[in-house]
Length: 248
Image (cartoon, rainbow, N blue to C red; front, side):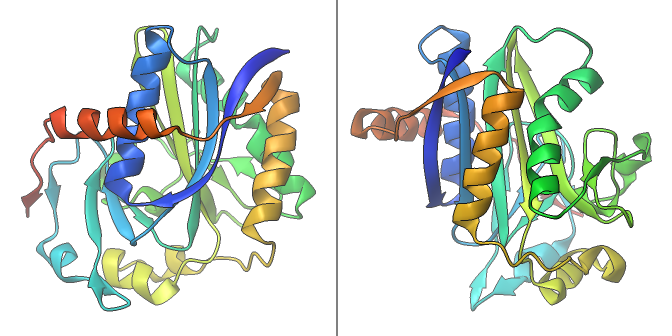
């Protein structure tokens, strides 16, 4: 087995999480970090936009959750907008994987399929083609990089970013999302109806970590972010130039 770093569950702002993912990717690319797996949650609730998603509906600026406007955050990866409320996000940073992108998605997502199957939620890869680019919501369609339930509900949406041979794959798992909030943002009632997931976050993370150990061939070393790393990530975040968000 290869030695991987496992960063314990963190709850923080979307801007911070996106900086962490990209910083870890850069560190790994330059040989300063091993492969990494981490799980995290977004606090406060946010909408993350794909790197190339320039225009958003004007109304998204005014949507509130528990009395606070949704954060608008740009991901370093592609894809469409994702609502981060009542979800759990995973991120993998690794390198030198063989195969085409579709094959790599399936290789890295195998632990999610197996883990959720053991938790009683069978998942399958989606089949939608490139028509997804016309839908502002990541969860409005399911490509072959995404995982859906037996009745076609998109449960996990994933995206990738490559820097040389280094790769970031991260994705959102919809666990306890408020259907009215989803509908208010995207206006899609069918896609807003999430299945009930009674399992605790701790059990989910533990189960997925175990299946990741098997499917990724990883010998995990649990290593929280250090104080020095928090400072380096904050500096990295300040240096990044964000692509503009334009109201449509």
